[in-house]
Structures are given as C-alpha cells and as structure tokens.
Amino acid sequence: MQDVQRVLLSEEEIARKVKQLGAAITEDYQGKDLVLVGILKGAIVFLADLMREIKTPVNVDFMAVSSYGEGTTSSGVVRILKDLELSVEGRHILIVEDIVDTGLTLEYLVDILSSRQPASIRVAALLDKPDRRMVDAVPDYLGFSIPDDFVVGYGLDFAEQYRSLPYVGILKPDAYQEG
Ligand code: IMP
Image (cartoon, rainbow, N blue to C red; front, side, top):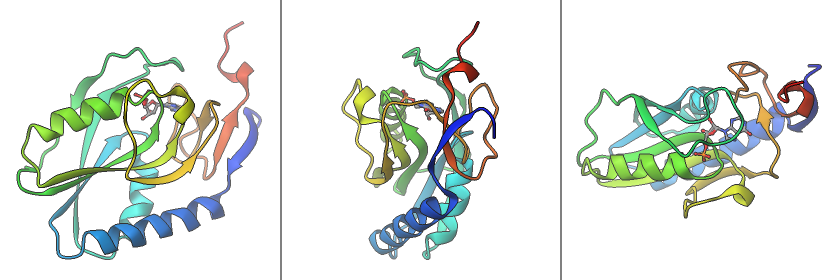
C-alpha cells in the first residue's frame, strides 16, 4: 500500500494478541452478564476478532461518537451520533475501542455509561498512544502501546480510507498533509 510508510503491527502479531486478550476476558467474565460495546467505526475489526476469542456468552452493541472529523487532531468535543440499543443497567460493560489517544473520547464514554448503573465498566483497546494523553484514562485490556504516529488499518482510518488493511501501518505524512 503506497500511502503506508511501514507496517507497525502485522496481521499475525495482532491475531496473537487478540487471542491473549480474549483468553483474559473469558477468564475474568465467567458467569457474568457481559455486554461488549464497540465504538464505531474504528473498533469493528478488533471487535469482530475479539468477540470470537471470548469463550463465554456475550451481547454486542455499538455506539458512535464524533471525534476527529476528517483531521488528525482531537477537537476535544465529543458527541453521541448513535446510542446503544441494549439496556446496560446491572450488566458488565466492556467498551471496545480501536485506540486511546488523548483519552477524551474514552473519558466521555465512561462518564455517560456510568450514569446508566451498569454492574461494572472496563475498557479493551487495541492500541494506546500514552504520549498524547490529556486525561487520566487507562485501558484495562490493552493490545499494544505505540509511539505518537498516525496509524491506519485493521479498522482505523484516515478520512474514511484504509480501514480494510489487515495490518496496522504508519501513514506517510504526505498522505495527510495538505500541499
Ligand atoms: P481520543 O479521544 O483522542 O483518545 O481519540 C480516540 C479516537 O481518535 C480513536 O477512537 C480513533 O478513532 C481516533 N484516532 C486517534 N489516533 C488515531 C490514529 O493514529 N489513527 C486513526 N485514528 C486515530
């Protein structure tokens, strides 16, 4: 893929990690009423793989929130574009995110979902960019900590492109810088 500078995480590396995360989640949620809340659209590939590695019954639902629009920096404004269809009261929520960057999206999601009286809330994130954190948000289940580069693939996009790449790659700066 000509816009990708280099592959950061291969398909095989990701698959191995997702298996491990699934095993840990399976163990932790044995016999519990678990709802996976996938955050559209970036988390869809991670969620689809992760849910098949969780060997205990789960429900799946989705939320969509606005984050970056078409740029690569956070506006700090988070808005619900699509809400859950399931009730989460008294149930265990596992938010499934593609990447935690500033942490603003996650902080907002945890706040809003906490107000619905779930039994617990945890977060599974495939990627974390700790260098860019603006608030105190730490994923409970983390795939990989990565440096502060803009990445695409495995669900992650830039301006709605590159989500279908099977690996996570670093985008060439000239693929997103204008002129
Ligand atoms: P935060 O609110 O800054 O933590 O942003 C989280 C959201 O920004 C993620 O769910 C992604 O949709 C998006 N995002 C952050 N960094 C990247 C990246 O490197 N590539 C693609 N999307 C990103």
